[in-house]
Image (tube, rainbow, N blue to C red; front, side, top):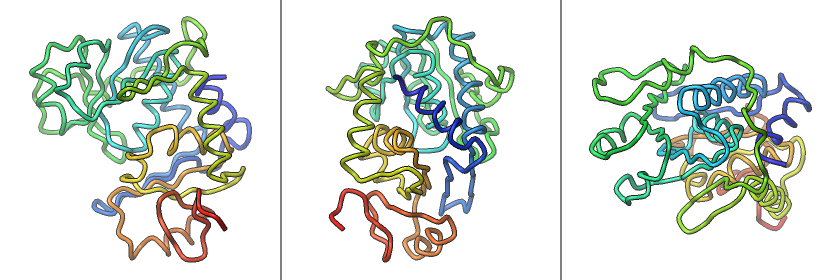
Length: 261
């Protein structure tokens, strides 16, 4: 199996149910994506990467993005193409030159523009998926580019589970290894099918995409992602969203993953 199969499993279980619900306590935004809606974003993004940049097995896509629902779509799209994600928090470490495409948040574009990168896409991370504003640099606008692409994705070649899937510091996991690690981690954390898992962006960034994205998918769980969380709002939000478990957060009366009962 590869990460694309985990998303396909979510579609089979309940295509209409919320799969990723995202809050931002600074902007006040709330975005909810069903499995169908997330799969739509993933397909459009994968088609963009494949059709415009020839991303397929053997390609490397650098992702300089914060934890965000659009980041989930980008990661799953790269893996759907059979390519490897280069997860980077440092734009000047010399590693981005090996990437075929770089996707970055708009506020991280300036230092990247100074490098000799083959292809650069900027994301506004607007809650409604709108394009960048006030930007006049060379990066292509992800939101504008992705709209033209189809809602159904067919890879030029089927992803190879033995191919590289994630390059993170000194860590390298294959596409199949990502699924195996996600399943093992889900078991260790105590994730079960039907869980609604609340995780804040700082915890998610520290834990990595296997923990905040793939482990819940592997377990048949859904995600409530909170950016810049206001602690006073979390109990009420957990109740409203029917949260059953938290990752890295303690909320009275709700199971904390990885902690003994």
